[in-house]
Amino acid sequence: ETGVTQTPRHLVMGMTNKKSLKCEQHLGHNAMYWYKQSAKKPLELMFVYSLEERVENNSVPSRFSPECPNSSHLFLHLHTLQPEDSALYLCASSQGPGQGTDTQYFGPGTRLTVL
Amino acid sequence: QKEVEQNSGPLSVPEGAIASLNCTYSDRGSQSFFWYRQYSGKSPELIMFIYSNGDKEDGRFTAQLNKASQYVSLLIRDSQPSDSATYLCAVGYSGGGADGLTFGKGTHLIIQP
Image (cartoon, rainbow over all chains, first blue to last red; front, side, top):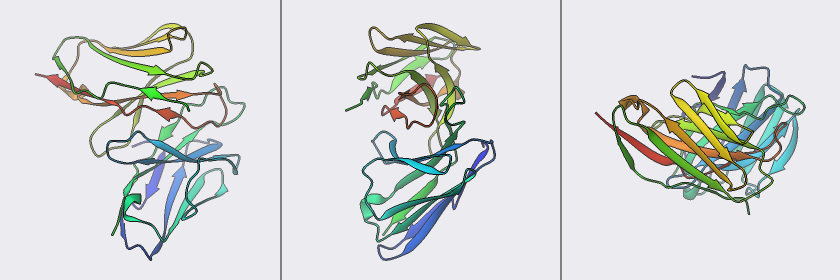
């Protein structure tokens, strides 16, 4: 386990449900990320937050809504998902701007199944 | 379109031998390069990063970068069964700051006892 935690670890939801994924980093980092990992596809970047500002939204459907209330916490709010959204959702953090490295450390992930 | 290419494998290597994993990338402006290891059902774990041309060694692992050829490799010496995993190559573009990484699909490595 790293200094990045994610809850829940597993989530099953129907297409009409609303749920949220939570990520917390204990590394003193200033940048946080959401990635999606589907079977047989590379990790796909979804969102990037730097100093609590969203700096990248990688053409993600609006049924995924991120929130970053402070530099330690990141949420991904989910609503009206589709079965093809079933995947492993990974949170990562890095030191952030001006810190000389963009090495990212991943949390354990949330395995999401949409029925 | 930024792309990172890896041979998906599986790559089968006898225990004790050297495993060689390769990766190519499309964007010449890329500045940072990472190797992650991912066990089945787990999240990616950082193995090494490299920013400059040449070799970088850390224990049994050596990362090699050739920016002119847009090529990154990872060598694992004295391969152990516990090295069996999927190895992900990732590329960053800012060399620092907040920058999403572009990942390859990964190479599945099997170390045969």
